[in-house]
Length: 82
Image (cartoon, rainbow, N blue to C red; front, side, top):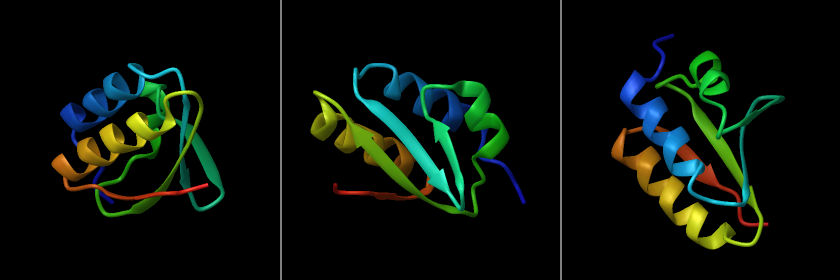
């Protein structure tokens, strides 16, 4: 499977790090801290769909920003409303 391009991974991580909230990507039974660029490099595939879990004081802003970055790079993500 092709991995997402490096620019997408860097932008996703940089965007996540702007927020205090915990931002976790779920894929099958794996959970990846989106703020970890290494975790993204080893997990993010351009042909997969992910669930994004966001918890914290700025969660709503983080959800909107993360959804925008994933869409910009044509990556499938479902922002989980908890």
